[in-house]
Image: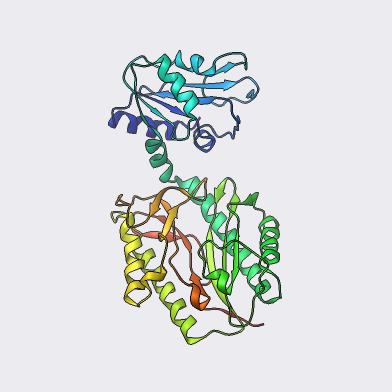
Length: 360
């Protein structure tokens, strides 16, 4: 068990008057115990109390040979796992439960421990996970540089006559080649009209001269996600496309400049969004400017006008403004991952962002 991370959770539990907590999300379990366990439909639960006492309740079908640093209580399929868990749960006070814990387990626990007040405990775990330690930041930097390498190797393929699906397959091949265990999400490789759809589904379209090409890709390196987007142009670029690209690039720069401790997440979104609006493209920026990232590509903590949480050192999130004009077949998005420092932020991606026309 990572005692430092567990201790941060316990401290937040105390400050928020939460006496106990049940953690069941496999990613959160890995974050604390360093072991991926996927129990399927069966119960598994890491129990914490505000005194720092722990207990891991797990089906016997998933025996742990190594020491996870936490006492384990096993149960069989013929036993009531929730009842066994309830033996460690106090009969009073406040307990936080995982936001993804199946209702069938929660309802059963409520039957057994009806005097307890139940709250969403994931807010605490998610907040602790937002603040990356030095080892996490190192892995995320390495992951970012690896995906930069993939972008650099993928761009020349945009002018080789491949369909979007074929370009996507090439992307996945390169992700494997550089050493990623897997993509962190399904890549987006989109030409022209497809690029004008922020979440275009890859199809059999082929790129044509003058098309913009959006490459939105990421990979998992040592359990940590990368995510970056670059937009390039096939053969030529119009003055209209150039104006849009330069607008998005400046919005990306302004968003990164606003990404610093003490500002709010909404300030980052507003910095990019207001600039895009000032250039007359406000209606064409149709999504938030970013999302938190770490063990998962999208973690709790969106970078949007709706989030007024204060930014803290150690947070990592994307800054990815975009402009999408379907009727013109133009779409541009530029995305970097930033990690907040005491004095500003480190931009983890280093791949070039200057407007690029790929010779056809």
